[in-house]
Image (cartoon, rainbow, N blue to C red; front, side, top):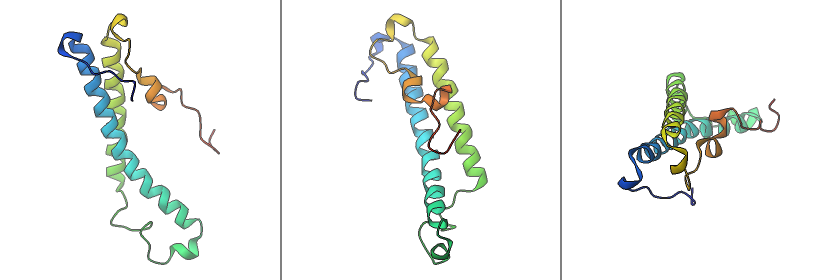
Length: 120
């Protein structure tokens, strides 16, 4: 994100809306990632289930995301990604210079992500 330029009002409403949409997707992604980190840590702990039966911070019902919370986080990411795509499409091509295209930063939202190890 270091190559991202700061938009000024003179550069157009479309760019400002796009940058706002990027922040929205970033916030939604962060929330989802915090849920996934808890689940991933628990998965690692449960791989050696005899140790996981002991009290641990990885397997803790207070930090475990609810199904509703996970669903909301996933849906917010999807909505934010769709909104970002819409705002990117609204920016005229000649005004995109210096902006990071959404598919470069969030390839999974565009179906261009490569599967991780053991997936696919």
